Image: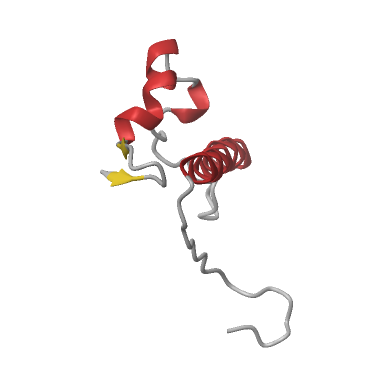
Length: 87
């Protein structure tokens, strides 16, 4: 539980209450087990479905942070594919 600028307590249940009341959309349901191809890579359809679900969650997080007036730092780690010696 945390407090926003107005001193109001917020919980995860408060955040997701509208989704729970209307029924959870398919893209917000917990992920299904990964489906792999013979070469060990994820199947494209599975990857794209999970990517859309996670992007939606990230946008929801951004809106919530802005609405609550919170300060948040999110750090993403990834591999540099540009060939410029990324760390």
